[in-house]
Structure formats: C-alpha cells, structure tokens
Length: 296
Image 1 (cartoon, rainbow, N blue to C red):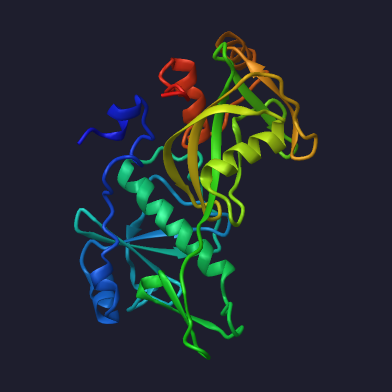
Image 2 (cartoon, rainbow, N blue to C red):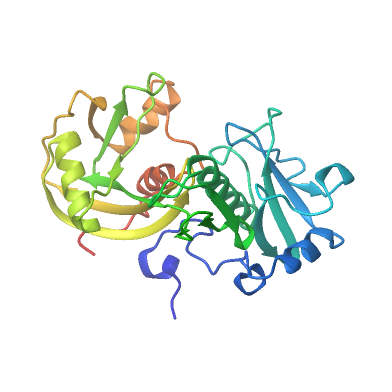
C-alpha cells in the first residue's frame, strides 16, 4: 500500500507513519504489570511542568528512589518504546521547552503527545460527569472510574480543522489572531461543532472567520495537538477570492503570494507558527510547491 506521503505528496513528518509507541493495552488491566514495569531497569520518566513544558536534553530520565516504589495514581503509564517503559508525571519546577518548539524524534513526539494529553485530562477531569463523584484513575491513567456510581470516563479529544485556503492564482489566505504577537500569521482553523461533519466544519469556519466560500476541499492528514487536548484535521481548499476577517477572533488577514510571504519573513514583518505545528507545515508545503491541489 502506498504511504500517505506517496498518495498526496506531502508529509506530517511521522504522524502519517505507523506508530512507534506501543500503548500496551494488554498490560494496563493488571496493576501488578505496571508496578513491574515501574521497577524494570531502564524505565523512563518524563517530567512535565504546570505549563506543559518538559526538558529535551535529556528527554526523560531514569527513575530514582524519590519517585517512589510504585507509580502513583497521578503518574501516567505512557507505553513502550523499543521495549522501554515510559511514564509521565507533573512537577512544580519550571522546565525548558514545549511541543511547539522542541526538536523531537518521532518516538519522542509520540511519548510527549500521549503524556501531555493524559496529564491535561487528569488535571481537567476530576469528577464524574454523571453524578459528580470523585474519579479514580485506572489502566495507567488512560481511564477513570467514579467511586460512587462506577461510570467509566475516558480522555477527551477535541477535533479541530485547520485549512490552507488557496485562490485560483495559488495565493494563500493568512490571518492574524488578536491574541498573537505582532506579525504572526497562520492558516485558518477552528473546532468542529456538535452535529457537524468535518467537511461542514471546514466550510463553516472559513466562512465565519474570513467570509470565504469554498469551491473544493481535500483532506490531508491529522496531528494530535494536546495543548490541551485537540486533534488537528488538516485540509487544503480553494476559494474564488474576496474575504474579510470577522474582526473578533481574527484582527486582520488577506491573500499572499509566495513572494510576499518570503519577503515578509525576510523583513521580519511576518512570522509563522512554530515548526512542529501542522499549520506551519501547511504553509511550508505551499511555499515549496508541494501542497496537493484541493481539486485532487
């Protein structure tokens, strides 16, 4: 079977390849397995601070006596990478980098993504959605059970679309959010609403944010973005032109040629999203002429 890279001519640099991280579902049901893995030689612990940062040099560390004889309820069993057990835990100390900026290998990216998603869910979901009772984490932190009514709760993922919109002349629509630093631009994005298909969400978000009507769209791939708990579904689309930002979420926006973007970056009038984000990869692929056609 052809890889996604061969099918569409672009890549999400690891997320469209087979997973390297084994979530080891068969081991999670027995707490003794997790204790055994915790005590195994070579097991690694990724520390994450309250802002979602972690250290990259080194990425993770061996367990020490101060970590405890067994994993605590707030410790996540992330999974196995090349046979090594990985755990994650929050700490109060300030650490160094984020998923947005860290130069991670494919395996490290999967560990960080799973760890952040699970830890963010742990912090934001402390009570049962049915009766309000306290939750107890099981299966290494990937499931929670209510102490009072036994309802199981699972980590929440918020699906969102992100779309590079092109006009007939192959210009790209870039916009600036009010909350961003001056000059930062990106492609358009937004969350999928209840009852919508992904395609309907693309058309609605592009219409609401920039008053653009689409004539074609094409799905490209997905990227987990646990900041705090999104799954980014990427698209490329075509519009006939025009456009006007909403003035609320987006402060300004417009159509850019490749020459205008390159010049703006060179003159530091424009900045793009971090290199790890699918938004940056969409823009980079367009700049390089490798972004697939929406009509494909």
